[in-house]
Each structure stands twice: as C-alpha cells, then as structure tokens.
Amino acid sequence: MRRASETPGSGTRVRRAAPTGTGGARPRPALLRQTVSRPSLHRPGCGDSPPTRLPARPGRPSPPVFSPAYFRPPIDNSSLTPVDTNLLTRTRRRPYGFTGTARLRCPLRHTLGCIRLVLPKSRRGDRAVATGSVAGEAARGCAHPRGCHTGDLPVLASATVGARFWLLIEHSGPWASHLEDCRLPEDVHTLIKRATHLGIRPQLIRRPGRRNPHGTGIHVMVADSTAAQPWLAEGVIAGPDDLDMDALVAGVVPESCILVSEPVFLVCTHAKRNACCARIGLPLARALAEMLPDRVWETSHVGGDRYAANLVCLPHGLYYGSMSQAAAIAAADAYRSGEVILDRFRGRAGIPEPLQAAEHFVRSHTGELSVGGVAVESSRSDGDTTEAFVRGSDARFRVVVEPMTLTTPCGTACADTITTYRLVTLDRLAPVRYATSALT
Image (cartoon, rainbow, N blue to C red; front, side, top):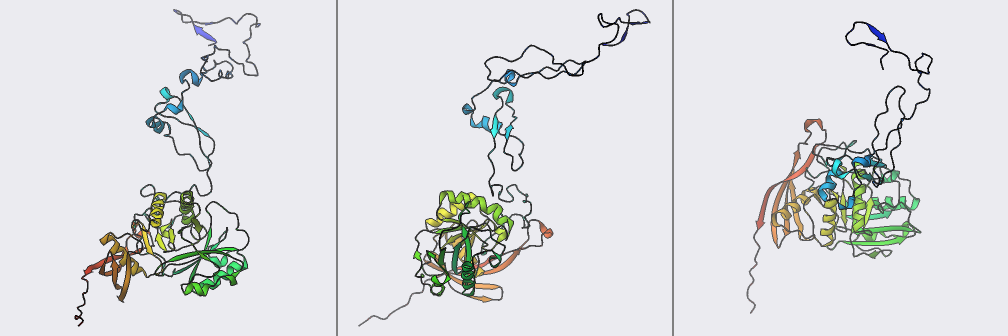
C-alpha cells in the first residue's frame, strides 16, 4: 500500500489517515513470519496428505500452494503400455553411484502423472560398458585406438602364439600387473616358475564375483591345446611336487588330475595389467557365469589388451576379442556345440599368426565352422609372405597371406598401429589319385 496517492481531478497529494488503534503509527511487521491461512486445495481420496502451508513473507501475500494430487491423480503403473513406459523413463543421465529416488518428467505427465523410480545400487564392475557404445566415443582412461573394443577393427590372427600348454591356478587375488610380482603363496610361485621354464602358460583364475579363497590344497587345471584331440584335466594338489608338468609337456594327463568333459571359458579381468580388461571384462564374466556358473572363470592377462574383452575357450585355446555380452554368450554356445563363430574370432592359440590367418580365410571361403574342421598341414615362409597348405571341408587349399598395417580411425594422432593379414591367393587343390597295378 502506498503512503500517499493523488486525488482524481486535483494536482495535490493527500496523505491517507493511519489505521485506527495504532496511535497514528504504521504497523511494524512481526519478527517471525506469519502463516497465511488459505482454503485447502486438497481433494479428498487422492491418496496424498494435505500440503503443508508455506510461511508468508512480512508485508507480502503468500504464494498459492497446490497439491500434486490435485492435478495428477494417482495411477496404476502396472497398466502402462511399453510406449508409455518408454516415455516415462526418458530422463537425463544420473551420475554413477546414485542410489536414491528420481522423479521423472515426461511428455505425458499431465495425463499419466509422475512415478518414482528406484535406481539399483551399482556393484563393482557394473560401470563397465563396452567402449565406444556410441560411435566415436572413447572411455576415460582408454589409450587404445578407437574401434578396438567394439569389433570395428579386425581381430583375426591375433591369438597368443606361445600358449600350447596351459596351467590354471585358482587364486582369489588381488593380482599385480605381472604374475611374478603378485603376493602369492610360495608353492604357487614355484608352480609358475616351473611352468614358465617348460613353456607352459600359467594363468591365475577366480570365480566371477567371488573372492573367497579355495580350501585346503591348490586347485589347478591343465590343458593341451595343440594335441590331435585337445584335452583338459583338473585336480587339487598339496604342493608343486604333486603335479607332473613333464607329463603335461609330453601330452600325457598328470596322475594328480582327471580329465574333464566340459569346456572352460576364461575372461580376462586383469585390471592392474590394463584397466580396459576389468572395465569391460568384469560385467561380461558375470553375465556369462549366470548361464554357465561352473565353467566360467576370471583370469589374468591372456594377451591382446587392445581387444578387451577377451574370451578364451579351453581346451582348444580359441581366442575371441572385442566381445560384448551377447557375442560372448553366442560364442560359448557355439563352442559347446563344437563350432566357432568367425565374428570377432582372434584365432587358435599355439600356432603362428600367419597360419591363424590362413585357417581363418579357409573357414570364410568354405563356411566350415566345426572346431576341428580346418587345420594347417604344412607351411613355408619367404620374407613376409607365408604359403600354407590347409585342409578343410574335405578339400585341400593353398593359401598365401602377407601382413598389412591399418590406419587407425583417429589418424596420425594415435601412435599405435593395427597389424593384420590380407589374403593374397587361395587355390583349391585337386585330389591326387594314385594308380596301382592289378594284382595277379
């Protein structure tokens, strides 16, 4: 209210009289805020309690208070269609670790009302999402060329060459960047040293999501990937002297182990070696373990960090790289059926990379997907060019391959290069028929 106002039709200013009962002085505002009493806008039966009155500022009217239930009657969320649910869940991205309730806004808020969504708590490794899920997007801390983790770059002929024999040792961790630096029991260190000396590839393994140490003894598994019939054996030993590694190198099952008929799947989750292996490998291992709880293991470094997540199928030593959860499940199902999937197939461990490329090109040409359906019979190298004779799909092929270097999608900004192999020649050889004289 203004102190003075102009009387209509006159040029003089007339002072209004003070209110009665105040002694001619203006009423001073109270020290504490007063609560303005207004009629309730709450509509009974809406399920919400009447809104709390807001304190009014001295000398100013209180803003109107409305109940959300007055405009948005409660709804049964179970009756929403998939389209409505999709619209309701469109909200901005929540920060990692947010575990509270979120009020979602949507184009249908005036009709469908608002819902409260409880976001689940994140577990270790759940933040790991395949790098580059959005085209051109790289994860924080990833130094690999763009496309390595999504399958956009070729991964063929990149399996570990020296992994002919395997020694898997269960240890719950933690794992250092290299096995010799890990804080392991002395018996485990002794096993690793003996295996390395004999050309056996040692690997530390643990169950996905579990960190409970094994009971008495040392749980080990051994495998021969290059035998005519690859095999896998398992056992619990009391010490290094109970495992005959010389028999393993000779292709014989050690006496302390027994043969295993089911395959084993290893997912590299070695964070200290490379963060991408844990960031992408941990959720993949857990998802795969839900389908095959007794056959999936987290493992230490298997080679090829740039192709994380890496999956190894034993006993044949088949390598897959740049795996998503769906691709890993498909590859595991195919391997249990005795087949391979060429998509994101890195090759077979234990043979040189040019021969891995030759097998890959023969499989692509013939469509032969059985695990043992393609094999290299002989080969020779002339400089960078390799000539191999490959048996596959009841035929023999002469395959010539040579290495090639790909330019990374980030151009010259990346110091890393992608080396793969290209097919030079693939010829089908005619079967040789030998004539024999008739017996008389």
